[in-house]
Amino acid sequence: MLLRTKLNATVIAGALLVWSSVSGAQSAYLADVDDLPLAPGLVEDSAARVAFDKPAGRIVEAAAGGSTTAAAVRDFYRQTLPALGWQAVAQNSWARGEESLKIQVDRDGPPVIVRYSLSPRDR
Image (cartoon, rainbow, N blue to C red; front, side, top):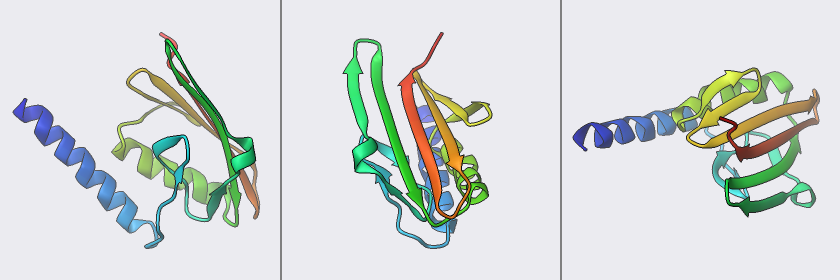
């Protein structure tokens, strides 16, 4: 139990460190994934949101766009997601617990279009 508490404290501290280093910008989060921050400069497209739960887990599709670059978006998630417990499993793909996350940059801008897909993890 003590090890788990120390691990949780380390993860939280790491997340705060990463967030504070991202140009001081306020973090926004996807509406349907409250612990998945939007990269700086992105705004979620509320019309593109799809979310529902099924017995095997939740499924969320979302999109965001903004005045940034694809490289900046990729760098942000490469730095931020591990601090939130996500592990890279392939290019643009992450896993945490029983969930899988894909972040696809569809258009290098500005503006940049980013698509998010969260689903139960295939085992």
